[in-house]
Length: 250
Ligand code: PGA
Image (cartoon, rainbow, N blue to C red):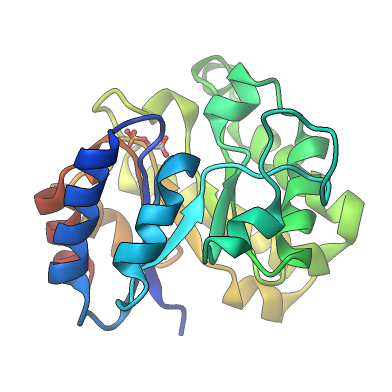
């Protein structure tokens, strides 16, 4: 059976002080928790704090992005090996804010997935359609195209050890999540896409929902058969919210 997951994406928020407070609170409260994989993704510069404050707990931590090449003249970039150096187990790749603001293409995102896997990180591959794409009825086509990029580069085994997060762009950060039934339909599409090529990988791949998740709705999403957890932005910046979500999902 797939373990439930809750991933906190803190995006570009916090200070050294607020991050330490939040991490310490989570470390105290969530430490003995079993059955839910909790992953905290702070900004890069606070990963050292995450490592220091979380390393004796069951919580995991990860980056919000990674470069697709091992090392070299890539000013401002962070490599997978560097993330490993700070004890990261996970890395978010292809978040819509990077696809749209940093212009990351499906191909580049697929390269990042492979690079993360090669270096011993579990990539959390974000996919999802914009509001306009949804209105045009192309949700499934967009999501499948984003998934296909990984297959083109690595075959279906490119999904082995990957976490997929369905994050409809129109539902992110605005308090209006997708309906749990809508999410389930896309999650099923994602699992079918993988299972057509490899059933056993499909049965192992966790598929998370993201977009305006709070403690009010996380449980409803997680009760859907193909929703294995949630990727949480805004609400994960409040310790009480995150703790409540973990308690409910557990
Ligand atoms: P949100 O963000 O929970 O604030 O909608 C989710 C995400 O972008 O990962």
